[in-house]
Image (cartoon, rainbow, N blue to C red; front, side, top):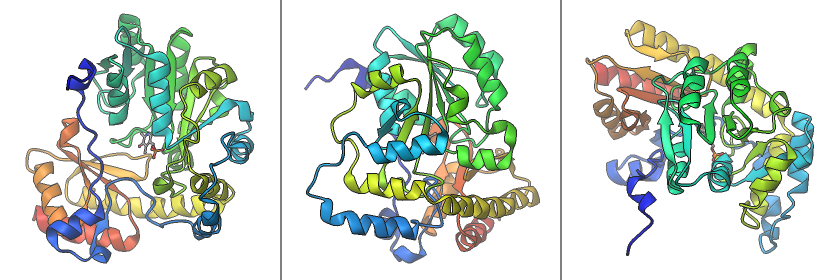
Length: 364
Ligand SMILES: *Cc1c(COP(=O)(O)O)cnc(C)c1O
């Protein structure tokens, strides 16, 4: 079978390893596995949301409301935008896919940071677009503007805070990039971890509303991180209505499930859960910073729910990740991003204790 040529150049996305794999391969009991690899919310599922999912189970035979009116109304209210400014996807990943299909082809290029969310490249390559990267993992406006002038990319991805590094780009710098590009280039501002950045430092807080005056900018958000709903697959894009209408042409009918819609709607009403998640995170991440200082390990100041430890030649991230895995601790090795580094999702106090215990043994 001859597949599209574009596929030859695509690396499979390496998803965080599941708990089941560690149970199977190392015979560790599922309750002893500590998963700090996929930036999931360590508090678990919001109990009110879990109850809603169960309550809606009897509606599983019905297709969902394809207008997604209630969830859009809740998001419109949360962000003070119109419902016509919102598109909902099976994770914000799916919105990234719609963007690729709506705007890119073999003649276009996309611009992104040197180390950033792997799916930007994969979705762009699926339609044959060329990838241009800056030479820095942080989003330096001058670098982006220079690369924009040279390559005229059709789409620019700004991941703030950035995954897998954890650093953020200030609102001022994001606006500098946006203001330097003409309206035929779409700027994607991916705010998957924005709840954490906004709580940490005001200058990094970007609200979708701040970008709505531009007809070539889309803000992406997700319920997978601070809202604790990674398993329900709900994300959203917010932009001017013309852009949203175009992206809707790429959307399959009923692209998110009835249960996911109900879960996200319930989650959107519960600010307290998000605040509690962020507060636990802020308290626990201090331990990772202190640990790194104590052991002379470099880390990237994080605006997300994870922290990235960058190793000197003394340590090898692959060896460390493998050794932790054997102990039942799953973290993310960043070797595939060409970094000798690991990304650790900040867990509960107990999960973090386990990480520190084994990590200390391994590096000793
Ligand atoms: C997690 C994540 C997303 C989206 O995740 P979904 O679960 O598909 O909503 C998007 N961008 C970044 C940078 C992420 O880390």
